[in-house]
Amino acid sequence: MLSIASALLLGFYDYFKKLALKDNDVTPVLFGSVAASAAVWLPFAVWSAISPDSLPHEFFNVSQISGRAHALLFAKAALVGASWLCGYHGLKTLPLSIASPIRATGPLWTIGFAVLLFSESPSPRQWTGIALILGSFFAFTFVGKREDIHFHRDKGVFLMIGATLLGALSALYDKFLLQSEALAPSAVQAWFTIYLVVLLAPGMIIASRSKKRRTFKWHRAIPVIGLTLLAADIIYFIAISQPDALISLISPVRRSSVIVSFLLGILMFRERHFGAKAICVIGIIAGVILLS
Image (tube, rainbow, N blue to C red; front, top):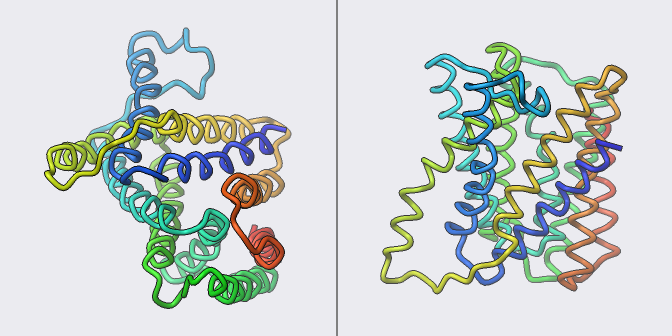
């Protein structure tokens, strides 16, 4: 149930992003959502330093880390910030029912980088998954043409692909931080979120002072974006920490969040071509499951 809840929240996370970006520029929406997450983590960082034994759950214990670890997490913030900037810009211009499936191909690129950087060798099952994802992605190019979206030259598509590639690198970097550096998930989540606010602050200041800036319209979905992702991650880490947890089951269930965001795009934003897109989404999800 925890993994299903995490998947649902991730699906709504994409929906809230699209909702907030509808009449706003990317910079204030991204900054506001990240700041909401940082506002939750900062008190726990202070609480952990003062009285860690009184925390409500061990996940919220933001353990003390070295200067080297802080530098590594600052680098993660830069990587995630670049990925999210690309993703937010891409999502602003593309239908949610197309942007989310593109983002869902992330595991394909993670394996690709693992093969290139770490000489890993995919199994026959994973090769089948790779072929299925690529075939479904290729099919999406034909669906996109019905909405005048040409994948080979659309800026939004390239931005979403860039966000996905950077996200795949971030996933490999997380593996390094959590395994090689033995950092606690809470420390990674808390400090990279706080550092991301620091990195985005100059851009926010410049945007607010720009003579060409658009009128900013506050939307209640802006803080909800960050809080939804935070809740999804917390539930996910609690789920995998359970003694009887099966990561082989939890991971595919969580990645099914694309179904939620896809359906929300169709139902809430009245996006078209449900049947053709649904077939492509099913192909991508099936491929992702085979990669797990």
